[in-house]
Length: 109
Image (tube, rainbow, N blue to C red; front, side, top):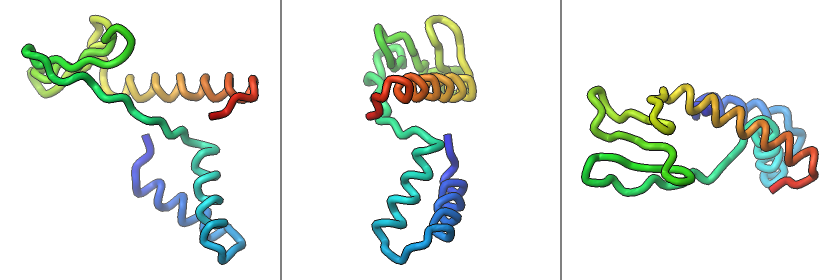
């Protein structure tokens, strides 16, 4: 995930390098530069918390968020507890693979 301050600095650099006073052109240049490196997705909603304090995501509720964990929420993929950094890393690699596939097939969305 990209930190907002990193995004702001990146956008400022692109704006400074864009040779235009036209706001639309500058905004498009910033968006294009961001989308060259980052992916924007619509994050799905988890289910409502059930009586046991669990929330679910994914096909067949494969991702379970235990809201009652000893030190706060705990995430399980199947039955394996997973750290947030592992989820972010896996998601980034999957999105990069999807981008390669889409670019090879010419299907960008």
